Each structure stands twice: as C-alpha cells, then as structure tokens.
Length: 376
Ligand SMILES: [Zn+2]
Ligand SMILES: [Zn+2]
Image (tube, rainbow, N blue to C red):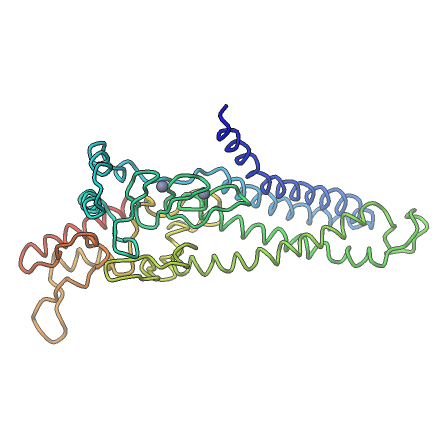
C-alpha cells in the first residue's frame, strides 16, 4: 500500500472518532437512565408507576433520536447527475484550451442546456475542476468527502458526513430529537439530582430516613447524567435555532455566509419562497412524514424554484386563457417580470425578445418549472 493510501486510511478512521464519542455518551446515558435512575433509584423510592411512564417516554425519544442520527450518518450525500458532467470531447477540448475565456465559452455552451441559474461572484460558470462537472445551483465541492454535494450545507464531523440535499431533513430531526432527549433526561433527573446532593451518608437503605437516598454507585451516574444532558441541551439549542432560521429563509449555511449570485447579482433570498413553502422544500408536502426521518424533501437537488417564479398553475391559466392585464388598461402586461431566475442566467442573449417568440420562450420556461414541480 502506498504511503498516501495509508495516510488516507488513517484519516478516514480518525474521522469516526467524534461519532464514536457520541455513540459512547449515548450508550452510557441509556444505561445511566434506565438502570441507575429508573431501576435502582426510582423503584427504590417505591414509585413504580412513575418509573414505567419515564421508561416509556424515554424509549420513545431515544428511538427517534438514534433513528435520525443513524439516517444522518449513513445517508450518502447526493451528487450531481451525469448531465452535469462534461462529455469526453468537451473535457478534452476544455483541457486543451489554455485561455480562460475559451474554457469559459465551452462551459457556457454546455451549461446552456442545464437548469443552472447561479454563477460565481465573478459571473463565471460554476465548474468543479476536481469532479469535472458544472455545479448545479446550491451544489458545492466538499474537500473532506472529495465529491460535489447537492445543496451542500456543511460537512459535519459529529456525523462524519456531508449535510446536504439528501440528509438535511434528517440532520434537523437529529438536532430536534437530541434536544428533546436531553430536555427530557435533564428535567426528569433534576429532582433525583437534588436528592443526591442531600443524600444520607449511610450506604445501607434501611438506616436512611424516609425520602433520602443512600450513597450508592447510582449517585455518580445521576449527577453526571444531569450535567451532560444540560450541557448538550444548551450547546445544541443554538445550533438548532440557527438551522430553523435557515430553513425559514431557505438558505444553506454556505449561502448564509456567501449569497448565491444570480443574473442580477448576489441575492441571499434568491431561493426563498416564503416561510411555509421553504419549510415544505425540506420536509415535503405530507405533514404526517414531517417528524419521521424518511426522505420527503421536494425536488431533485439539482433544480430549485426561486422566489421570482410565480405559482406555475396560476401562470399557466394566465398565459393560456387570458393574458394578464395591467390595471385600468387593456394592454397585456409583459410577462417579463415572471421569472428572472428561470431565464438562462448564463446565456448572453436576452430571453425577452418582443413578439411571439417571447411568449413561446416563457411558456417553455413555465413548462419546465411545472415539470420540475410535478416531479418533485
Ligand atoms: Zn467537485
Ligand atoms: Zn463532506
């Protein structure tokens, strides 16, 4: 094995250390809560009914937490489809060209047929030299995974995976269920935590006054459990709140730091469709699946509707039955403001030619968008 392969292998193994750490903490918290708190401490105080209720709720939150964590870790990041890769001849031509302008022309020609509406800040086609493909909107190359990831949010060491289009919903649920898990553990442990502070120093339960806990090994687990649950709760809360805000705005973490560049320039709200629709983009249309870590996000990860696109159904009705009228006149409104983003941003020619060809162009753009919506 070559030295670089050994190094890569070591790197990959080390990347699992944070996941292993979390798994050990979770496994210990399970033992501490179920065995030390419920079976040893609560049942010892004679509150069997309470212990059963605690155990049922605990297992429910534990299963949802572990399930969403598992899905976040083991869902492979989605990569761009083959249509975004350069063909062999284009690739050869691209590599032969030494002038940047000529390379850009090649990319522009290929991108013309792709649903790409964002560019680099310098208005160049977003191209990944490493993967040799044109990056779809919201796609970024992850150096840790060494692939281009659709709607990449960030590479998370705690799940040793890229958080992006394929697992963003799982990641959000993982944060939410871990918060609920920590909150439930911390609040139910609190009263026993206080009791252990004021515990009877005698080791034997018989010699202790009523309602006082003996100084057993459970003390360490219960005290520590409270601290760990409270600490994780506080640290995850800010991260979860931030991601709730991002979902509401339909931004990825990367886009929150660097606004995507559209035809009219950078627009941090370019993909925002309104809070409700933004939420559905991630969680899907069927509310019954929202809280389950199963994939229900809308779209294919390569093509995203933007806030400048009107409701497709409305547009079809308007453009087919009766043209939209400007108030107080009989003049049809130009369909121009319909969608900036649905234009080929990368095309140098104007899409808004006067006459019949304009409407045809718009209709075909609308059709494209409707197709995308139906597919999603
Ligand atoms: Zn790449
Ligand atoms: Zn990654």
